[in-house]
Length: 308
Image (cartoon, rainbow, N blue to C red):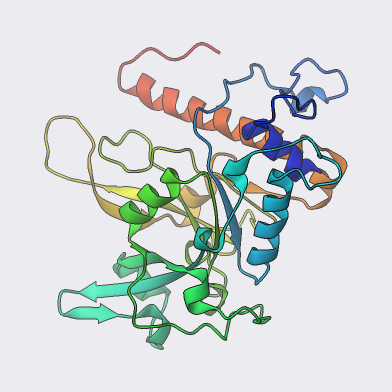
């Protein structure tokens, strides 16, 4: 129920007679522990995108469940209607990483047995791509590790950070099966898992959304976890004080851990089972955490800090 309450909050029902919409969070509700209250409630975002992320083969089933919910077929939410949350086969994708090491050609990361962590530290050209789900999968696959994936000669529909970001942010809902064998081959390093993007203070960054990944496989360990952070690489030599970007890179170590609570949120499975507003509270807290980080950057640049 917590997941569907979250959908109702960020994607309100379009059925005018609906009385089931989850409308707000009461920051003064005494049933909520003091340490879980917010000092303020931020306005709802004007644009929200729901992206389903999984390593498994459950994506079509989850997409079907959400679509039925959006049509009013969930037994607990019969009055909810929102066609924006109905997914079709065209809304499902598989991700892949492709590696370009030099100007002489491209080395496909799947087929390079000599790659290692030190190589990656020297080479940031790992290219994240999206392929249509059913151009890779057949409809009867069951392998969790995705060993039956059949890569075809057809180029990816969306390739590279900017192109993927523009596509994701143009959508209301879509699903991505990330590449479990690739993540496993890198010993479950966060950067090789499910990337999310973080851009603060850059002028030409294509990341216009606040990206948040909620996952039960996020740990306080920079070398193990499902979620990785992609950030812009600053373009040097402008000399005008403005920050522009020349590309993107994955964060490692302490810098990656600092994104917890802003872009990465660990989900203790039992919490949303017991508390129907748990997801909403975590998302809103992440929004506040990011806002406080932005105001600190502005203050250090000589601007006035935001009063909270």
